[in-house]
Image (cartoon, rainbow, N blue to C red; front, side, top):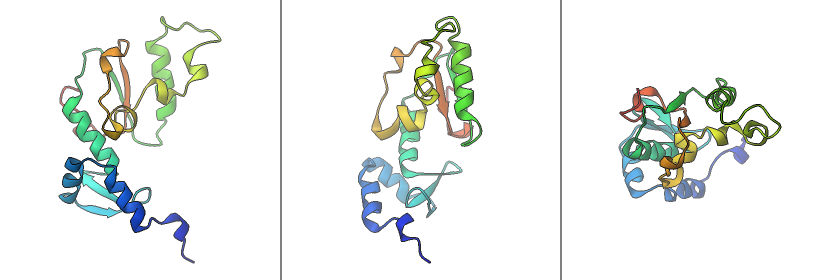
Amino acid sequence: MVLTHYTKNHGEEAREGEMLSHESQELLLSLPKERGWRTSYLYKYQGFWCQPMEIQAIVSFQKHFLACDTDVVLATIPKSGTTGLKALAFAIVNRKRFPISNNHPLLSYNPHDLVPFFEYKLYANEQLPALSNFPQPRLFGTHVPFASLANPIN
């Protein structure tokens, strides 16, 4: 039995490429690739297998992110408790700003909205976020391996 419902066709593959910048498309041509399961292909970038849109966001993040000494970056692997870790970190870092109450942000917002991912939210789709507007200390999440994080992060 062939599960064609779950496979991508060439039209979907072309649309994926159209969403990428010219620079990202050129980069992908130089990278090893294998069939993907959420996208047509996964590409080996800086030693790890990534989706095309992730690579574009990682490149943008590496070029533009300027770390502050007070930044907190939660670097996790997928499915390792990231949502709970983000909620806990947000509650601890903001315990004076948001005392326990019925209108605490964690009661109304998903932890992924309160502690955004670099590659899936902030730098996705060629965005350049206004990070200077974030309250200090700034909280961020990422599934990007440490070796691929921007230089000022340690």
